[in-house]
Image (cartoon, rainbow, N blue to C red):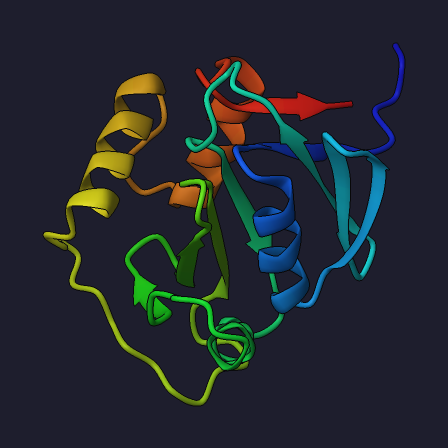
Length: 171
C-alpha cells in the first residue's frame, strides 16, 4: 500500500492579492506559482491558495493543532484579524477560529487544560449555532461513533470516510 507522506489543504480564493496579504498578516510566508496560485507556509505547514470560481471561494475548513490557542489568537488579533476567543469545549479541546475574507475558516486548538493561562468554557449544551450545526452534522455523518468520543476524533473519521463538498485536498 502506498504511504501518504503529506497532506496540504487548498483554499479557493476570489482575490489572490487580498488572500496573500491576509495570510502574510497571520504569519505565513507567501510564494507564488503564478498569478492564480500561491502557497502560504508557516512552520512546515503548507496552505495552497487557488484563484478560482469552481468551486466557489469560501467553504474551506481547516483545523490547526497548535501548542497554545490563546497565544495564536493574540498573534492574529495583533495582526488585525478577527478571531473568535478560544474556549474549552466538551470534546476536550480549547479552540478558536478565524474566517478569512473569502469565507474559508481556520479552526485551531489544543487539548483542554494544556498550556493556556486564560480559559473560557463553553457549556456542554452550547447554543452557538456554528458549533451545534458542526457537531450535529459530524454526528449524523458518523452514526456509529459513540457520543463520548471527542469532536476531533469525529473530524478525523469523517475526513477518512466522507468527501466534504467544497473542500479539496492535495496529496
